[in-house]
Image (tube, rainbow, N blue to C red; front, side, top):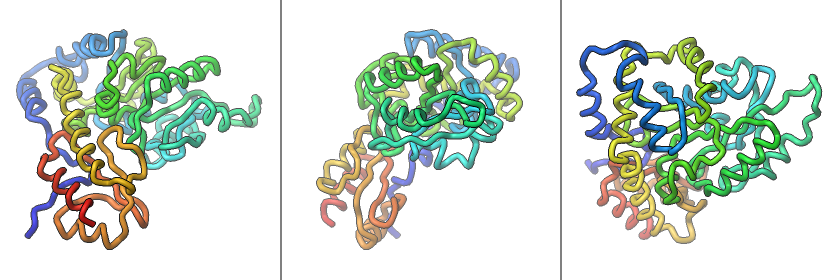
Length: 335
């Protein structure tokens, strides 16, 4: 039987050994919830990484991270502007409306699943300023986007300036923030200029069960702490979540892992001339493939998701084997 070669999702990747080691080292009695020494150290560690003050809350899922961040910006009678293909719209089972007690999502358009000030304005300018219509309270952008494309620092800064001028909060869903930052070659601070809150992805990048919500205005974290408890995300042994995040920051492991994943994606993309649906700017590759071509790849042991009737999505991770990435590239080139 042909061994499978995993390109389904970076969620399926192994836990990085340094993360396991950090969790084992945390396996000793300490203050429960978020009072342990590791949890208490996260604010300083992330502040150092991002070169700006931030307050950090750990949670177990990216959905919770996104919704707790947005809950600090949007009231139940308000709305969050996001791309029509955004994860909070397409893949979170209505969680934003649940966490935000009825706040709605306003869907905007944009190439490669990225928003622009013009696209946001087109979605919200027709809204009348009266009590009969839901008012926008925040903007959420995804880095890298749902199609694996990365916002340049200036693009983020332009959206941030628009948000500030309109009195809107700005959230960044950073499930693959590491991959985008590694691709851009910029600092974390440059990649988040003007962002109010960031969902910092860990699970897709070698973590096991921890994501982080970063508030760049620490006062905005106060309400989120209560909401985290109310939503069931204040874990009693929080030190194990904090340990994963601390391990990711140690020696910039989060960037090293992302660079490895990005390199594997670039290897595959190099064999897809004329087939690529979007630029490859992180660790996702969207390729036009017929049903027969997809079946041929699966027979060779490659696992991936179909993307509609005539395409596929391949996702690489920190543990993608070089031989597997090269093998996939050769197999696609030979179709």
